[in-house]
Length: 316
Ligand code: AHM
Ligand code: MG
Image (cartoon, rainbow, N blue to C red; front, top):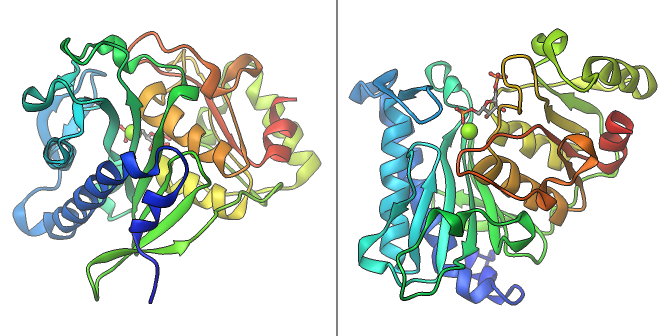
């Protein structure tokens, strides 16, 4: 009998408390995957005609995924508010304002892949509120150092549907089994190889990179002879980096002067997973992503994630 996601409840100090939330993420993943599969028949591909807070065109599927995720978090009864890439302000769940936890989410990451049937993902993390339960949750509750994160993970909508998460006791991968409609443990105790074979970056931005990163990447390539892979969806690029090793980076550049990826719902959850899988997760200036002090809900940061040897070879 294969082990299911119920094993999360037995993991560490937070497993039991996080179980309903991660089950909620699992339900959202199943619903979002179904919407993605049928999108072309519902005319749901393409732009929604709206912009998110970062001035990016929202896709219809970005908006639908956001609604599904929020509804599943609401239904857990354990979440007082959600900070989402698709919502400018913190979304307070009015029925449960005294609940203990907040979720940060990028409901559909890599959405430029949607029109070409490429992989996309969902990225999330969970923090405990700082304000008293008697108060209304506040955006300041989301601005917590990554070391305070209780659980984090991602969903990969690829050839199979996978949920990879950690409640602080190792990183475990679960694959949705369509035969019994359950997530089953498929990748227990995921460990990033100490060194890997690939670097993953949008190299077309090289001339615009900050921090002398173009020369550093060239130096690393000369020393290590790594191959290159880039999907353009952080979840897919990170998943490969965890399984095969190597380094994924999105440096600051002339256009994205503080980096492109968002600290709270992209960089921190992925850094949490990377560190708990034995890898390294750095921002610029040699600071670990999990040690950054967040200042704003939609703040962006440079990211360097992967096998320790490869991250050090790049930044060292
Ligand atoms: P999104 O959240 O709007 O989809 O943007 C984030 C995505 C990441 O998944 C990916 O790593 C990166 O943007 C790709 O950016 P680029 O197209 O500039 O290479
Ligand atoms: Mg994203």
